[in-house]
Length: 391
Image 1 (cartoon, rainbow, N blue to C red):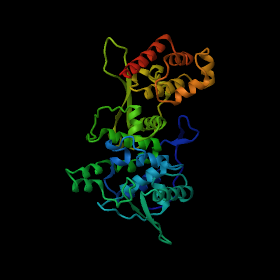
Image 2: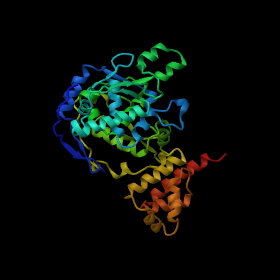
Image 3: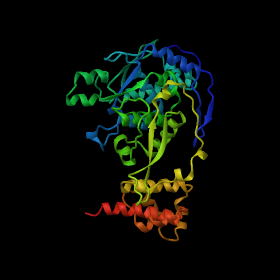
Image 4: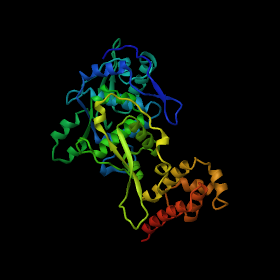
């Protein structure tokens, strides 16, 4: 990969953030990606165990590598993008040492000021990856460090391409450890990985996990992940999920809609958000087109308590309902409740994952400005969950 100074990028402020997000990748980054593609795979291979807990380990105390990488302090986005780029450059079934300057990687990822600040961020990410067992680094005085990728689960074992490992252990329990998804080269060469936020890239990987082993040929069916399953399988926050979904939508890679759950003419309609991935978008040049909030109706934004399948999910919907109502302070909600609950009671209710008292729930909905229909809908959701707790 060559090095040169990247030109300034067109940017647009992101929703809820003072920092602008680029609308398009720079020409220098695309040129660098094109050069890198001649030394890379057509499709990078990534083990599912990097993205999620294996089904046998759901609820494990240690987060999956994806979550650990994003949450490991400042710089998670660069760490994730850099590591995936290392995997993209693994052209043989055994690991290939990579010796390119930090500036080259910074240009590939379209980091600002690639020769200085960008290169420093790459070096910091590289040091973190080495410290946590994802790579080894050999210093070459006067030359670029040589990076050797290890198994992406960070267990310290040598890297073997998952495709080759799965083939070698076909029809054995060991083979299940090497199931993988593929990342097309266009993720880099058309500028998507450069534009994605860390949350957006994480959600893209999670959707690949959700669609696996479906062949990614459009039109794809929609998928849905409950908040509890999202936390248990991926160990990422609801905020990461929301930001990631919005990022993929702005890049044209995802659409979402609300679908009824077991529609019944004689029951209150229950809806859930479902997501559809558009992998064909990767064949087009990346361009961020932020969706305006005003295009979404208030009804679409309002959290639906009947989509909750557990007490924890109902409490999560309460938190979302509070935000939908204007993110009122706990003190203001307690004041509006006419002494139905105290500030401390509400704080504890929203922190816990167990079913709240019905009278507190109803007063909370009214304090948020909910209508009588809203109160009844929340009460119905509460009764359904309470009935499930009866022995």
